[in-house]
Length: 150
Ligand SMILES: [Ca+2]
Ligand SMILES: [Ca+2]
Ligand SMILES: [Ca+2]
Image (cartoon, rainbow, N blue to C red; front, side, top):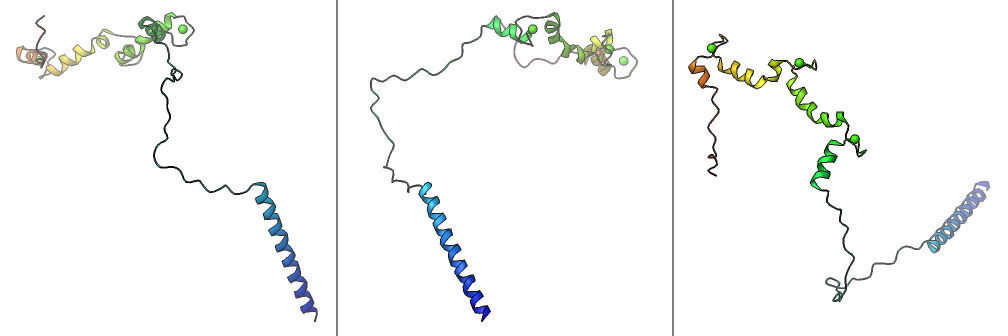
């Protein structure tokens, strides 16, 4: 008998919970109703009569002069002044390329690296001298474009 009464009480509680849940959901939907269905859009692109109307001009940046661009290429920290280091820093990469041993000193061999390499490649027999045949290999390749006849 107690089981029947207990089952009835549980059933009433479940019904009460369901009623409260439905009421709460209805409150939420009244506060923030679901969006209205999208209206059917007319076919084709919108059009307007813009004859005689003038829109605002698009933004444009002023062009730097050639001298200003050259100045800013050296002025690395943008303080409107070019220090000696800033001026010389443009040569650093080329210097490091030549400084083969990285000791910040440029020997004659490092400075003349292109000629040294060309000599070494041409010296086929490795006797540290070039005979006429070896020297002939150092001639620059003929250019594909003809020389200017100006
Ligand atoms: Ca500067
Ligand atoms: Ca060196
Ligand atoms: Ca030789």
